[in-house]
Amino acid sequence: MPSLSISGAYHVLTRRKPMEDTTESKLAKVLSAFDLTALGIGSTLGVGVYVLAGEVSKVYAGPAVVISFLIAAIASIFAGLCYAEFGARVPKAGSAYIYSYVTIGEFMAFIIGWNLILEYAIGGASVVKGLSTYLDKLFNYAMRDYLSKNFAMNIEGLGDYPDFFALIVTVLFALAIAVGAKESSRLNNVFTFLNLSVVLFVIIAGLFKVSLSNWSIPKSAVPEGYGNGGFSPYGLTGIIRGAAVCFYGFIGFDCIATAGEEAKNPKKSIPFAVVTSLAMIFLAYFGVSTVLTMMLPYYEQDEQAPLP
Image (cartoon, rainbow, N blue to C red; front, side, top):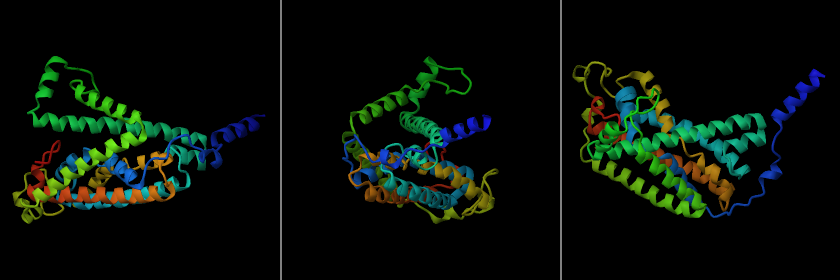
């Protein structure tokens, strides 16, 4: 009897969703390959492009941050190809949750589903917090000073004050998404275009201020605690550690697969959108990190808001 119970429990935990159930959809198929590509870029190329390069170059890799981004991009491409294949075979909303449900079983899908919720919750919070910090710096930290004075919090594990701006931004974007796929896609396309325009402007403007000498700073000129100077002041270990941090900047492209159920031609548009968006994201990170580390010595980078 115990063996039957164990066998039954194993069967329940590993039962898989039939492929036939994944072919039916009540969602309108309105998203083109361009929409999916813009969605991938918009979801991935967030505040990280304005923050990561400064932090990784100063703390982990120095000017070799460009190599760290390359390593992270290669790892992301491999993961992206897996998403592309699954998205083409199982064009259903749910991303890794539905893929694991179809191939592995219900229990693993349950775990992966909750991990995805945790990922999006933490990722969304970090993005809006970074946006809030950047805008606050433009106004000489007026928001931080006011909130920390009037709404100070002394709770361990939480911020020093509630970030109302980040909350408002989150609610506004949640409402925009709730309106519908096509409408939210149009809004995303606009913001993605603006984001890429700003990144391109920073890269082009920075080219007039670059100096190759910042990639070969002698050890004698480097302050204590910032490595040995040169292109890779922290060595190979620093490059690998930096790549692990840079990989965070490529998280988000999986939303392309999540929206696969609303794609017009998912078998072609999902693989195209995944690969294209990751390639464009890498070029953006590579360009920003190259210009940034050539404009300023790596040890002078601002970790919270590195772009001038």
